[in-house]
Amino acid sequence: MIVESPVAPASRSAHAVRSSVVELRQYTLQPGRRDTLIELFEREFLETQEATGMSVIGQFRDLDAPERFVWLRGFDDMENRRASLEAFYGGPVWQKHREAANATMIDSDDVLLLRPAAPACGFALDEAFPAPGEVRDAGLIVATLYAFDAPVDLDFLDFFAAELHPAFAAAGSRAIASVSTEYSENTFPRLPVREGTHVFAWFARFADVAAHAAYREALVAQPGWRALAVALGRRLQGPPQVLRLAPTPRSRLR
Image (tube, rainbow, N blue to C red; front, top):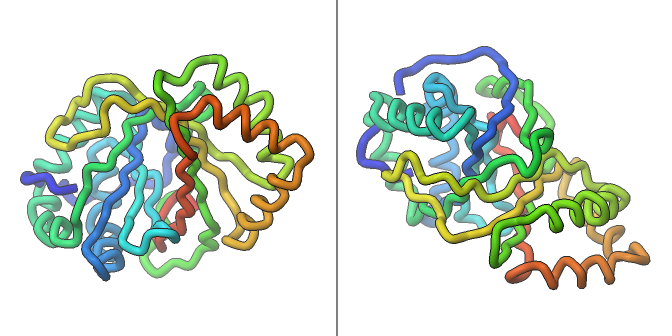
């Protein structure tokens, strides 16, 4: 996070997460420090962030990048984002632990500001955080990011809904959310976000790594997939970015 100001400790009961603004945050960490940050984050920064009005949707180890920590947090709107971030980073918990958190990080500026691609496409989670020490099935969350040279338009959204999503579902994916770039001005500039990007991302849940591998095999084996992949590739700025995300012990999204 690397902010030079600091949340009062508090907790909230289980509540529905229906965020209209979402941050996808990818941190590059110092070698061997990911578990250190996860332990600190889950001990000090879950309930205390939510106490300010934001929602910590989930936090993850990137299975393909051992020094990458990925997490999602949501806000009701951009004004709520400003107020919540001011409260958290100006509060005593961040002030107390910011040096320890920042010491684990090389870069924390890979941040996408996103919104649900359609009203019903956001994250919908009713579970509370797992309690410390509680054991729950973690599964695997896979995020697929598409980059464009212009804002995502209705033509692509229709293509995704009518052709891509059915192919993904037939191969075994369980899509849980789809989001695209939020173009509002950054209401908390002390935390930068990536600007000038046009992104569509969708998230799917799998039982485990083997289930995801089986899905990929089933997808490419579909008779019509090659033509769909070509049609998709023509719309994109480059290859999709696929994040295989292992939920941490207290991740709500799992």
